[in-house]
Image (cartoon, rainbow, N blue to C red; front, side):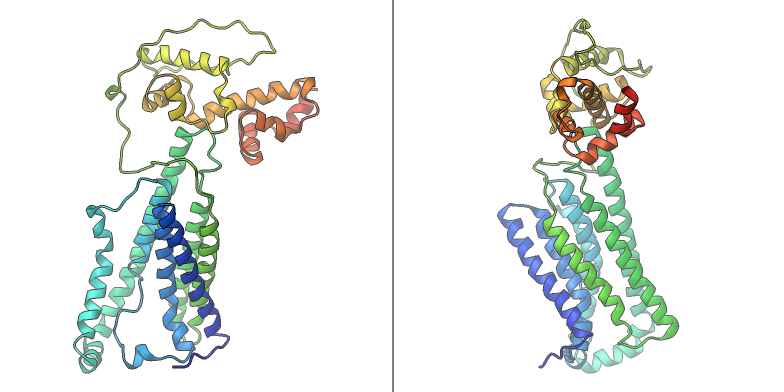
Length: 401
């Protein structure tokens, strides 16, 4: 067999090779670092490669699937959506592992594969008759509609997972920049565009009865997705934290965790040069038994300034206060009226406002001061500062003069 390189076959071949090269790299790294997400992303790339290889071979002049392997399973279409979903779950939950109850996600792929293998095993004559009398009279459309429906369903679940994860990070970490998984969002957007583009090409194909050569454009879109997913996915910076987010595990009620007895410390007398805690409204919903812990938290934030640590997390702060993260989260939500991320960043912004007015810091840049105040990046600092002041740092300083 000779492969003919042309303007149609060559881009698909490059995409196919790109997918396999990066899949192997991801499998090796995933095995070495025991990272399931890398291994699953490798399989996502393989599934995408099998979405284009039929057209790649056809444009290259290799017709074995039409001459000898008619009806043999050719793609991993029904496997791709669950692979994408589980890859994203493994990204935001380092402890995620497949369980028996997850097997149903792969049932459509198993059923479709068995159907094609059983028909193919009957021989070429039976396959030809079956396609003409049965398969092409509705089963082929059922397969297509089922595959499209599965793609949109898992895409919806993946976006739900992303939104829930974003909310969760703000309740657990003071700095979400390194664990925000911007790649998570961009990957889903790129996948949505690809699905929409291929659906559009299918509609145009049905409407205008396009030939084999014109169908090439839909495959080219998949090649672009392969290049983006392989390069950006492999370069995605992995968080050093062991993330344990899971939508299936509801937070335990506060009553399940005993509160550690605490004694409210007296208010500190401070002057303008000493850090003071941001004003806290007295919410009506905070339970009486949580108020001593709330008071102790506010005193600790003022005296020890843990917010100056960029990697401060809810779990870390809870350990210092000898309580449980679930309890502390409720204290912050009901006692301060903020999620953990906003609670800590409010202190950082107030610290920056004090430091930027200090003549001794005149030689430092805004970014330098922001990093000293606990922020981990310029983007995070600018967003937080505008959120809590309604101004940019420059506007604030100009107004204070």
